[in-house]
Length: 137
Image (cartoon, rainbow, N blue to C red; front, side, top):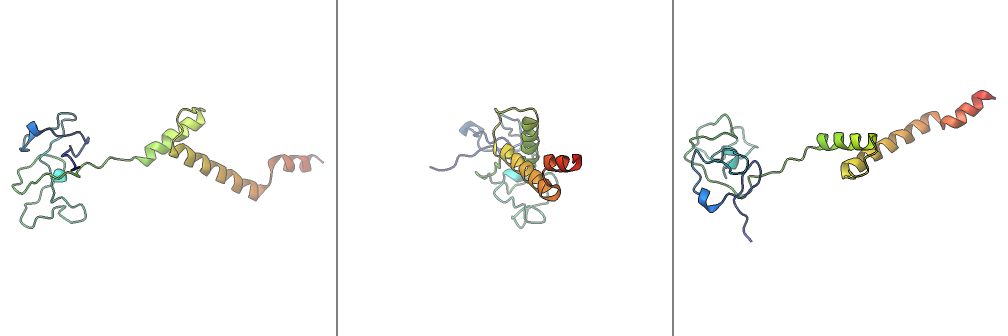
């Protein structure tokens, strides 16, 4: 099954009625500009100009509509953003408040980091109860 043409920002399907994409085309779901560098098959973030077309003019804002005549939409423009910092923060909040409903990989990683740190402290200082008993004698 061939990939469908989707919005670069939200990933929603761009219906046949929206084609061809003009400079004023917007995503019906998120209102993102569609005639953008980031939506073009020549877009290459590894290049200095971010454009693989040799004669294309430089465009400063890659996520904004432009007048480039070389624009060709690409089907793999949508890259879901995974915000690991956000996931980790949510996991820490969930573990802090005991919210067992949020059992994600991030929660598990935070718990593993916590257990590892505790284990390292116990190796350095020994078991706290044993130390208290020795000090009292």
